[in-house]
Amino acid sequence: MNVVIFGLTISSSWGNGHATLWRGLCSSLAKRGHRVVFFERDVPYYRAHRDVHASDAFELVLYERWADVEAEAGRELARADAAIVTSYCPDAFDATAAMLDSSARRKIFYDLDTPITLDRLARGETVDYLWPEGLEPFDVVLSYTGGTALDELRGLGAREVHPLYGSVDPSAHRPVSAAERYRCRFSYLGTYAEDRQEALERLFLDTARRLPEARFILGGSQYPEDFPWRDNVWYLQHVPPGDHPAFYCSSDATLNVTRGAMAKRGYCPSGRLFEAAACGVPIVSDDWPGLDEFFTPGEEILVARDTDHAVSLLSRPSGELRAVGDAARARVLRDHTADRRAAELVDIMRRV
Image (cartoon, rainbow, N blue to C red; front, side):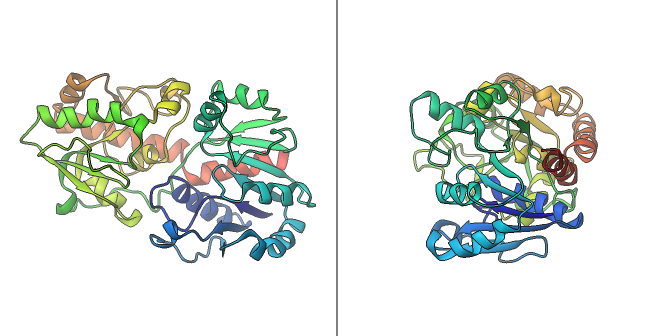
């Protein structure tokens, strides 16, 4: 099939979770013989931190203004078997209008940020990447989030809704040797988000305070100057994607913290969760509805309720922790790879 995607970014993993997911999906689609063209607005923020300039798995079309690429987008849509517009696409209105007016055989909206979208609508805010007339014009709506969020999307007019969860490319995320620069007792990798802060303080920063002799490492962008650092917490503003396996595998355990809107609705596993599991590192996570659909608590993932619980989990014998990490990796390789998600996506597109 010819697949055309209008998205936020695939070229830069800086401060977003879209890029890594799309790289894995596009690679898996390419292995199946499908052709993917990804249209991305060339914004300064991602240009300055671009870590992919070209790929054998997809054709990247960078543009500064929609008018510059409108004709090319029209040609690609005319021969597309499937066209997808995603959440946070900066030209979502123009791209959606072009898609709906085209002869593309399947017209899809993929919300990679469903809880954020629904919360903003509930507050009466305008969501720029949503089609003003609702979701009814699309042949299918894909959601990064399952559970009750799917019913809410149907309430916005979606005729057919399917979850398409996060995934991981096991060729990019796998067990590797520990790197001394990342060696620590407990790690966390994630962009700053205000609605993650309470859980991050409770499960990571307060745990660091309780274990002052242990080394903690936090990696991620956009952390404010007044962030409440601890003396034993090392900060890395950006960990390149190629270093993620070494980052995880150098930790005795790593933390997964879910954004508030996503934790509230549940059924929204982050891409980082699958990436860490694929590296075989033991994961300590906050709790949310549907977590047990992806990993078995106590066997494949450790769920922490509060600081005391997090400290006790980190104090488990190293053999027990390693067994949890090994079980998580086995589960990911069975159920949560990019190949698995690509097969699900192709099946959805063929059945619509």
